Length: 432
Image (cartoon, rainbow, N blue to C red; front, side, top):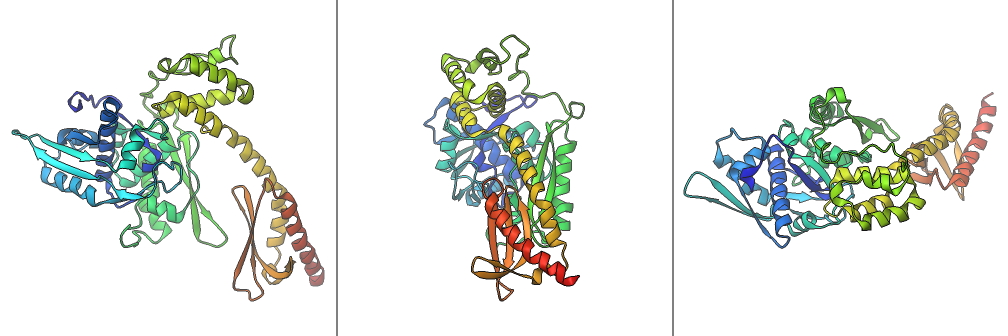
């Protein structure tokens, strides 16, 4: 099967999300080889779901990793053997609970040479990874191995996988610790960090990775990042932003022919018939039609269309099961835009009052009674869908955190602000 691969065409790995946000010491070549092993295993499991041992020749590994011209097979053998001793901690962003915990990258491997020069590999994957590759319920990132083989940086390869895993819904905000683990900036064994200064992380990791992906015309998106401070002067979190790459800056989409959606400018624009047109023909059946008919009244046409488009992009093994989950959980993030707008309106409601408080000179020394305790305001932060009040206790050394939801705790937020404003107004009068 490997010998028939046409490297001019897209070769896609449906990579389980739990194997994307990982903590491991694998270098760039090991990561590409790991993906090659997952791809071959997935192909062979499609033919035999009970299969445990998988086979691949070294020539195919080199083709899938962009190292066809590397004739140092001794180095390749050692690198592959090292994968058995390399550990992976899965699912750091908690997207795919089917794969969690820590295992070796490859469970076992046997390297054997035939009578000629061809070297064949026989390997086994950790059982949780193998099961995810064959499960109909696994959440996948659709990875184009022909794009990934060309990437020159480990950080670009990691960022590419993350962007593909969250292509339709945006990558969640990460703490700097999560970011450093996922990008291999922390050694899993020693805990030592590769770069300690943010200026170095930007110079050697973030900026080059974003540039390589943004400059590659085969990559269908652009990616940027925003560093977030929480309270002090240190950057505590990072947010990656994915945007579709303009058509003028990219090659034609290699998946377009396979999943091209027909025009919806028909009389049945808002009906089940039009939704079925958006589904790849191979997955259209009576069961799908019944589901869409039942879901149409509850969710509406536009919402279902977005979930269908997202399901198409994920190329799941069980289309209907994945689509049902996408509709129930809003995988396409349709509701996120409205939610973000509502949250921004709530932030604007409170932000002027918070700014007046924090703009008062020496506000940290003014005591405020919260409940039965006298506390000192240290800071007030807006974080995603929350407001966080930070106080110091009577000794002015221990931090007290009070966190409320913008969406559900309006009364509590109002009460805290009113208590603080009352004291601040008296303080301002005393200054005058």
